[in-house]
Length: 452
Image (cartoon, rainbow, N blue to C red; front, side, top):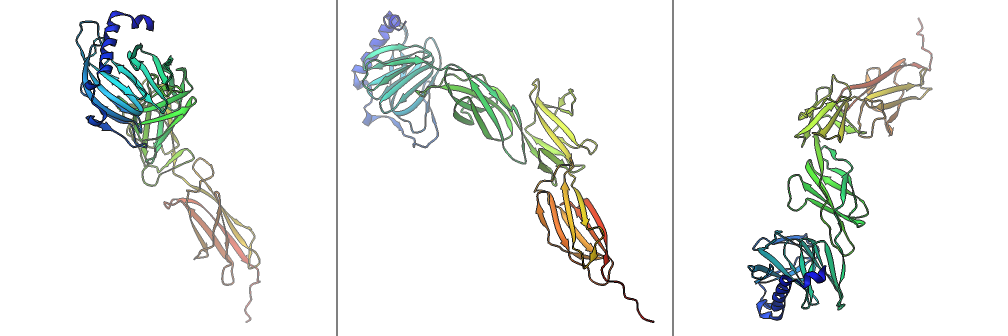
């Protein structure tokens, strides 16, 4: 097919025009007279450059280009109008080009690479990579022309052509195909200003390498995040509340990307915990009248418990009748859900004072406090209870030790003749009662009977 195209009359006319360009260096600006030079630092982010006529250049990190004078080339059939062609010298690195895709292009781009290798991008998306001993051109979408010296040949859409060193025979292979992409958690809850994360899986495209992109929903500019993975799985993290889309594209060993996959929706919901609330063991603990405020939930649907009746999601949620409450959120028309589990912000303390038949000063009186949340699970380290210990009416301050959800202390013997009442009261950090116990401690010494 390439041979047939190369010998067609209109292709021969176009190739003659390109030979004319290459044989007349005066039409091109010499390196010392270039209009503009772009030399990003090696660790810089990709640079986007808009050229007159509509060409958009995407420079990879560290890429270097030098702009030349534009010219006119006949890229259509004989007798057709000439096309204004921008000229770029790719010194090193990666250059991606986007041009309007049309049967009669109004603008084109001539790329001059090292080792006297050149290409013309006529429309669609094209890629050029200049390494130490290799120059690679890819017609990802839309046809190109490529040449070593003056040997111009068509490069049809979907093909990659690599020129290695001084080898006159280029290497060719297909551009990777469009993969499929799946988001492990299409709806994510990010609490207390936190940021969400989710796994992404890509497959297909004819390559084991992928680049995964995160886009703001409805935007087609540069993605907010891009990661390159070896294998089928990657993770997007640091996701602020909002509506996103995720796509993937396959990457071959020569550095050429295929077209993007279809985009998949991703929603990150933020939640602002009211004062006195906290998130523990997958549960949001709320006060009886507190409301959990959602951020970025516009357009979502919500339901409670196991119900299948969804309504437009309100901006905040609270406990139902003060009991544990499950809220399920989803995008309209989707079956992917995120569950929000809320429970009363209650701390339960099991208080034990032993031995129950203690006598001072013979016995050592110990206090053990076991802390549990509203669901009966061991309270986490973040639970900070308040303990008060009294011997009769006097408050004492024993030394407490903590291991997991258990507190322990030894009560100093009371003063005087006894008996004594030891009382221990535990509350949560907000002062709400959590548990208590008391013990009457006898005296080990017999009471003295005064003489009459």
